[in-house]
Length: 241
Image (cartoon, rainbow, N blue to C red):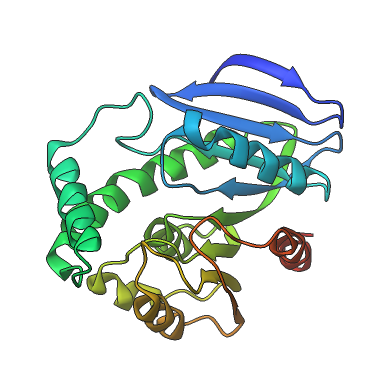
């Protein structure tokens, strides 16, 4: 992990940008140390997502959590995949036409992303937990929900997850969902124009966790109510502190 810049906000939160094996990322740490860590998932494109990510990170830090994120494969300045771009274009055409999204399109778009992104997240977690400011335990918060689902199955250091049900999940991953056992809080925007509501409900039903909670709010993809951030912090406080 090589740090490339840092700044300290007026609330005492230290933000440091880094690269790890050519992958850009950001870590935010509160004044207290060592702090539990929350991995911030997102749909890709760190420069565009930064305002939302830094707000989420500082909200976490206010409750004593460190937070970190990395760029997704194909996001930001990372190399694009021709196959992923083609699948994304097919998805957008189906949504624009009001047609059902074929499972094959979702498989082509999401599965390669999960296969590449999850090992990268685990490598980043190795590096982050080596920092003296971070002591664990670890939570995951955000999307892509398929990435969060795979991480919840294969990464034993993640103790709880807050998942954003705002992206498609391949049907082939539902068996993985049944293997998830950690506590879950799932956020669903009822009128999300780019998501399949029934698929999201079916996925929630499939999760094998004994403790799982679904919060469904009216509104589109970016309309998650601000109070859900407070609920998320309380959820992580129960399981990471």
